[in-house]
Image (tube, rainbow, N blue to C red):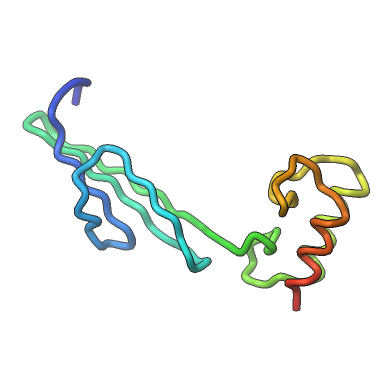
Amino acid sequence: MTTYQQVSSTWYLNGANQNNNTQAWSHTWDIPGQYNVTYVGSNGNGSVSISWNVATCSPFDMDCDGLVDKTDRAIVWNSIKTGIYCKRCDVNNNKEVEVFDWVMVSGNSV
C-alpha cells in the first residue's frame, strides 16, 4: 500500500470485530489479563495485518504476575532505596517513587 489511499480498516479484539473502520483505535481494559489486538487494512492494492498481544495488570502488581504480594512491595522498596526511578512503581504518578507508593502497594497486597 502507499500513503494517501482509501483503506478499509478493521480492528479485532480477541477475534471480535470492533466495527469502527478507522485507522486508529484505542481501548481501555477494565479487567487485567491477556488480550489480542489485530488490525487489518486493505484496498485494491492488497492488504496488511498486524497483531499485538497486550498484557494488562493491576496498577499495584509491579511484576504483572496476577498477584499483589511481597515481591511487588520489594520492587517498589528497591526503587526507593536505590533512587532509580521506576515508572511502574510510581503508583500515584507524581514522577517520584516514595514511601507513599510502597504503602499503596502494601495496602493492596495479599
